[in-house]
Amino acid sequence: MSNPQKADMGVLKRLKIRCISETGWFDTGEVFGDIRDAGGAEVDQYAIPWPPFGDLHADNAAGFSALLEAEEIGGAVRRLLFDTGWNPAWMDRRFAEEGIDRMLQAGEIEALVISHEHFDHFWGIGSTLKHCPGITVYVPEGFQQAGFDLIRQQGHTGEVITIAADRPHVLFHGLALVNFPMNTLLKVGGENVLYAHLQDRGIAMVTGCGHGGVLNLLEYARQNFVGGERIHALYGGLHIAPLDDWDEAKNRIIDGLKGYEVAKLACNHCTGRTAVEKMLELGLPVQRGTARNGSKTELFLGNGDMLELG
Ligand SMILES: [Fe+2]
Ligand SMILES: [Fe+2]
Image (cartoon, rainbow, N blue to C red; front, side, top):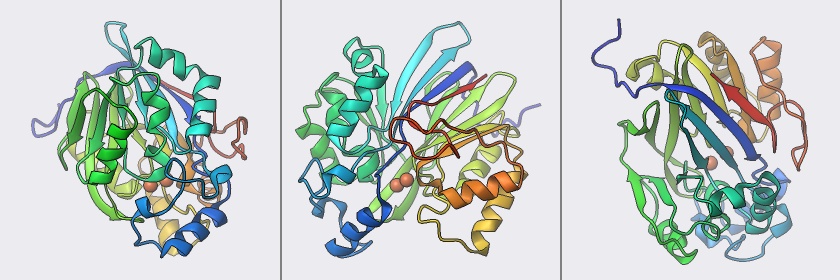
């Protein structure tokens, strides 16, 4: 019996996630060197002249973006773009290689969900809007005015919907967004996490970076959603050790993750290689990638790789 206090988002038959780009950038030392030179972690990201605002180390800039294809119980397929990367040149290339440009032009992608305002997830929005200026855009509460200005400057003509903090917003049957308030690097606040309820499987959680802490975000699903007693899958950036520094607290996160008994664990981007190696040591079901299209390791899902759920 389900707990009547829990939110019932409905169920989906299947969810397919295609990684368009998980390479936020190519060289971590260079991107953090730029941040240090700009004044450090507390500086406003919009003060750094990276693409599209300038050409500082443009060759190092890439981005994070994924295509979600949700199949409803009745068979209809609904597509969402989850984040839109960073460097317009890189995102244009990846969108062309994966056919995202044509899907946008044909109106086959109904919305762009921005997980959070970080440059590597959001500043490439021009690459989406040039193909579909009227697309509905979801952002988390906490977005800066400079972020809303960027959306408009890049030619957006559609609706921008701000997801309020701490309560589920059901996009359609079986799929919900929750905005977790947080304050992190470069004056960014609020992160939208996506949860899908898959028929007979449980909850799948999709994150951009997971700045709220992967265990907190999983526990939210367990406590608050019908179906949350089973977490079927995880996809995205888990921000455990993006700089590959390691300590006991991080070991505890990996141990905690094991406790959820997730069936498929598809992490990438800012999770960190060391974190993934530790997961593998503990026998967690890490989905391996093919290290193509700019992704450098087979340890986790990379650019052009797919996760099929349901
Ligand atoms: Fe990240
Ligand atoms: Fe981030």
